[in-house]
Length: 265
Ligand SMILES: Nc1ncnc2c1ncn2[C@@H]1O[C@H](COP(=O)(O)OP(=O)(O)O)[C@@H](O)[C@H]1O
Ligand SMILES: [Mg+2]
Image 1 (tube, rainbow, N blue to C red):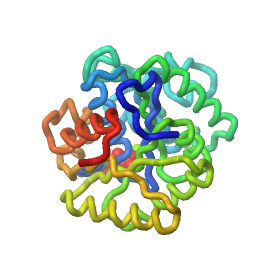
Image 2 (cartoon, protein in one colour):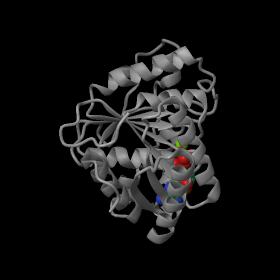
Image 3 (cartoon, rainbow, N blue to C red):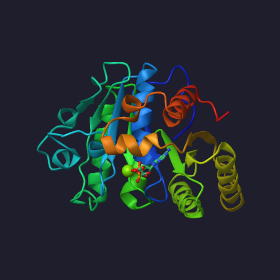
Image 4 (cartoon, rainbow, N blue to C red):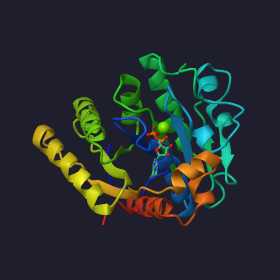
């Protein structure tokens, strides 16, 4: 696993969106980044990898015909479960989605070999795109870790609440126990101000450095923005409902920074 995609990144790069605590904005981040990367010219696939509480389809107002659960039970091929959003991956700003489907929790209890098969299938289908974004479940359970390890880059979402920081620390610790070269990047979401976001990142970085001997890089900051919950209520992509809002602008600069392998300014 490595950071720095650079100009010559090969196709099929997978970016996993992770967090310690739930509700910090992973799905907002995953969907917003999908649109932002696509607007910057990448062919983009968004996969709902939250096996217990999948909800990308709800946030984006999709009515999927097929989902990961159907793929895992062998009823549908992964490529046939793709839903186009905003014209699909062939259009700038559009992308394809593989929904996970919520509620049943049916995928939460997948056995390790099934999760590994799922990760391998995601890596294969990602090769038809320039980048795949994998929206993970909160926390650091075995399935989530297996999916995170299948990604080339992991973006860890934190906010300025102490619980988000302690849980994110636990995630980094467990990931690096499995893979000592893992170098998750950090994004501070829902930032009331840039200063508060930097304080949260500094506290997180200090804890990681002190106890893990590893200082995660800050990839970006996304502002707290009332347009985010409004877009979710309207079940529309943020960049469609509010293309010029502060959070979408932050997501666009996060995407260009990630594509260029740049740290937060
Ligand atoms: N940048 C933001 N500004 C304002 N509210 C946000 C922002 N990011 C997330 N939220 C709020 O947080 C809630 C949880 O976001 P979600 O992406 O579903 O979290 P997760 O996927 O981590 O569980 C959303 O319903 C939204 O209202
Ligand atoms: Mg989510």
